[in-house]
Length: 376
Image (cartoon, rainbow, N blue to C red; front, side, top):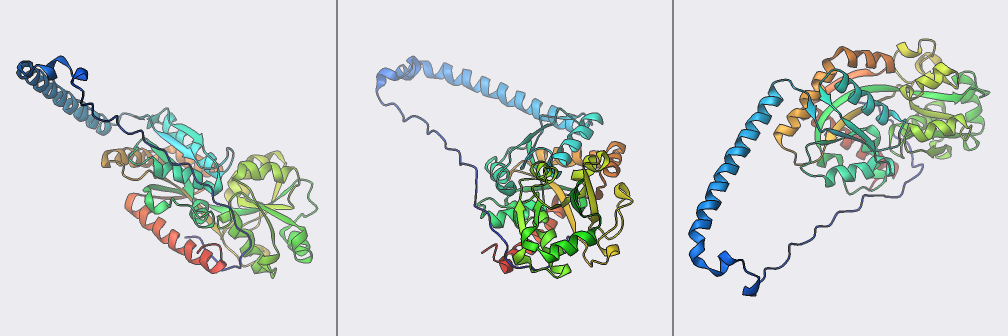
């Protein structure tokens, strides 16, 4: 569980929720006999109709039973799952998006699930996607990539949909945060940055790829408090995922960014950005030359996490398909390679165990944000 430190109110976010769908009622019963079928007007024809209907019903039941049994057999035979869709509740290019697309590719490459469709539905820190997920009650083919940021956004965005309404599938990874600057930044070390930040906290904008209450918001606020800056004076700019945060960082619209380090690895390798410090307890293999905050004399450790949930009310069979597919993905050599490539820590748990983790996280975040004035 991430380590949280209580901090004062900084900012809020307006609520955005997906529009509820409406159902068209069935047309009223027609009582005029002119609209009745010949069978309805002639009772003598009914016995034959009953016989035909009964025969068709029996055939239908037999066919459905055969289909269900065949489907169950296929599910247990190890054949790839099909028709699965994975929603990313923020913009392309961020941590959720990367995790979802890597998971889909691994499942496809390893013949665990074929043709997994990944799509983005951004808005309100992930709660637009969450509302869509809750609205899709019973849809066992849909799941949503999510994480700590969505937990916080449900409170700061005053979302009607909550994660406790969803069906927990699996927690996948944990990831340390990073303090990142553009390549032309005057700050060469985390010490340089902190010195300048303390001198003018309101004049240095820090960006994060989550809404208030999310990990990219909590990290700089905790960092500010740890180094002696009043969090109320922090100039925090919220972006909807790393896909929006990165252009702001590259364009020097912010002095530095706080987010999961895995979102910047390509840009680090290409020299477009520099990571001044990571928030893990120990150095990260993917960034071997980057110090931790602790090794730089700043006593702070922070960890983010990501997982997958499904709509409420899905069948046990559909839940099993998802969990089985994700478990096989987790056990694959391809997934282990991706963990190392992106610097993710394996944090895999499924079903009820993930559900308990979600409940605990929801309560912890709610308690913190209430004390911060960001939640009622």
